[in-house]
Length: 316
Length: 316
Image (tube, rainbow over all chains, first blue to last red):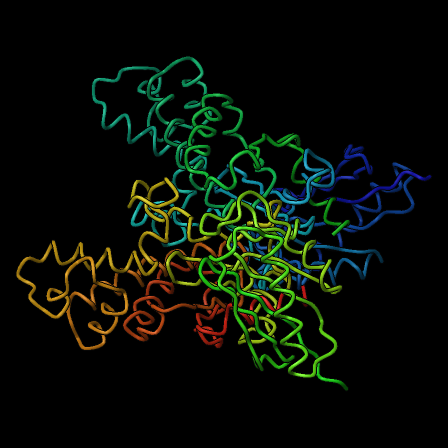
């Protein structure tokens, strides 16, 4: 049988990465565009299509399953990007419709977190699972939900925003305008914020994180400090794991998944995050679900998940 | 075309209600068994089958879509009741399999909250909706989730336990062994508890609820007091509506439903509950969902929802 291929496109504010993906999840080639150089969506899609054709030609691939596009505010029902705040294109950009004029194939659009979940199912560690949820810890906290091997889109195509479930009533101010959203505690920025708060509460602490100017502190530094035994680093990840464990236990009461996958930079902190997370999850999981749900780290690489997730959408 | 019928069975700890339901949602006849008189599941199912036959004969119905059974810990995948704490039968009772030996038709088992949600779709106010969630306020808080017109069962058949999502970390002790579950605040017992707490905090309050011995206080009395303008009654429902609004806003981040339905006794308190609930929901709903979700009261009668929900399962 012929090897199948798909195109996966990751639309970011700065770069648009276009990958040619083999059916086994290998990205065999990729090209890129500078998203922020475009103010005209027609021109953007035109150049994107040219790059795809270039990619197919130079790899001698004549036939693809389709083109999947993961984008901020990507809407699967309309095939469009809707008012994405970090893109130059205003209003609704009907990507799928525009792309089909250039390349006559299946074109599927989704937001990046949903694409990541679907990528885990098609190319990653959830190939054999019917029910799972993914949490991506990054600038925000993204999530994607799979039930009966279907991506949950809801009535708006924007289901799966668990980063904006309220975990502490009247808690930290969130960028969304509300308070106490999960992502204010467990995103990269939330981790940074917790470390800074803990340092303020511990004036005698004089460890490695104190040597960094607050504005330069990153979640990566906090993770490295934790892994070197730094008390502020360790306590920060204790807190993050604790809250994430509760959020995950709450998510289980919704869809009773077989597994929850974690993705994103902060996950590389490893056991300093995973240990308190698993402990909190076990403590807060309703008894009827005990032993039915596994917490796992995504098997997709951080620098590949966006393209793979997008390519996976062709199987939607 | 011939009118279609289904049998809906509500298995409770005391009574088992068996209804003959017409396709338009009218319960045309019903009979009952005393669940607590049975210690032998074989005998119980035997008598249940005899009652069903009696019901069909006396109503001249020869053909049914099936038999739906709503039961505590009812499992749709195995067609069984699993270790229900308030039934005399121990372990797993394979209801569907046993019933089919008596009556050769489709037999579907589910828990009561999931059945209620499905009933809302087949017979109630959600006939035209693809995505919705129901919350039943009663002894506990039950919930059922419909996505793409399918009941969410998850990997265990026990998805949709939003009454046990943790709304306040380290909050009230719940019967499930954990703390801060939604149902400790918004079930009938939770409402009672809030009223008692508020009276303790307000020693000068000398209204109608103070005249009731604490052990006799019911959520119905609190609702009646609120509707008569009693300050403790009103404040109680303010609190309940506030927390329920947050829980509902959180549920929206999961499945982006078109509507959330409320069922159960406390809902009859009316606007003293619905007004603060809607206010809290609007305040806590993520901006992208604003205007896409309606909060509605179930259109199924409290005393019919169990049978109708069970009967609806025949369409699963």
